[in-house]
Image (tube, rainbow, N blue to C red):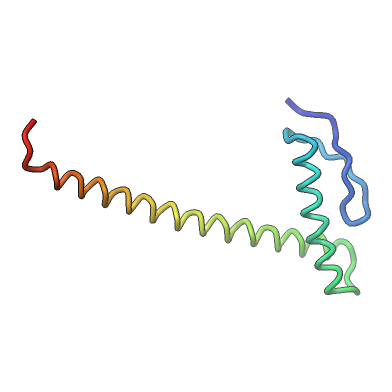
Length: 98
């Protein structure tokens, strides 16, 4: 169910964000974006807000892709270890007749 808009402030601009998340979650997301934009702006004082927003989006997308890759690698390692354990158990019970 779509909620009413949550008012947030990002980089000095007020927005009304509608979504399925609760207000606290939406506010947390907006705060994260705001912090990223402020970090970029602090290091690049002469760039305009559009470029700050674009750089923040690229940085956040980079974080997402990096985490997805790390998660995928961990998942593959877990599946391999699980398979190895199942193979080991199968070998232990190979000669046992039920």
